[in-house]
Amino acid sequence: MKLDILVFGAHPDDAELGAGGTIAKEISNGKKVGVVDLTRGELGTRGSAEIRDKEAAVSKEILGLEIRENLCFRDGFFTNDEAHQLEVIKMIRKYRPEIVLCNAIDDRHIDHGKGSKLVSDACFLSGLLKIKTELDGSSQEKWRPKLVYHYIQWKNIEPDFVVDISDFIDVKIESILAYGSQFHDPDSKEPETPITSKTFIESVRYRAKDLGRLVGTDYAEGFTVERYIAVNSLDDLV
Image (cartoon, rainbow, N blue to C red; front, side, top):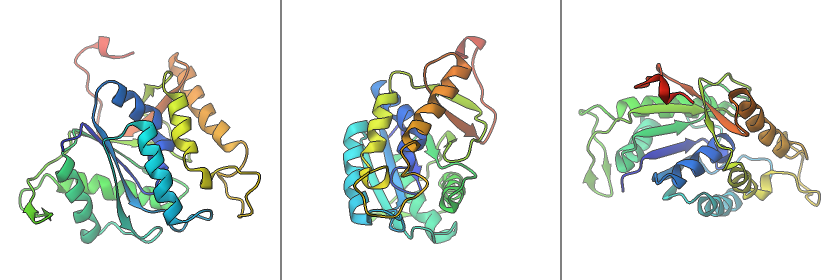
């Protein structure tokens, strides 16, 4: 299956938190979008890998994703080496996306920056003819996405561009709340974390609202780029 956009996240819920509104918007515009999670989030303070698997499946349906896969890398301990790059390359060559979205280049959680560089490097290597990969017993053809963008996560990184998600903020929030084990639950007996406070989801909505304010819309999501953005005409700018 060929996808228009393939989104990578170091953990289940990264894609939703960073780009859930953009994903929903692109799907509504007829694009085929999938998500590949690098790990099962097994080191998360709350819940378990099995719970996260179920939550990710629920979020997949909320967003309307074509596919969702998990590479089952070691949470916290995966590295940007040949073995991991080849597994990511297999996904890129399998789905042949035009655009890849991936983790923030620098963030509070070390897996986010590692995942960002790993995916970015794999996108380049995937286009090299002499790197051979096989999937399900068949040789894969080379493929390099046209564009790689990085969504924003915990840190307030200055975006290079923003996407108007005003009509999709509620879908974004719903997809995030599918991960009920990770966020505020007054009945939970598990330890508190930076994302379990009552105000965390409010902060997600506020960031989107503030980015929207800066560009004259209700809500927006920000992204950083690896190369200059080119437009055909000044009319392409909103």
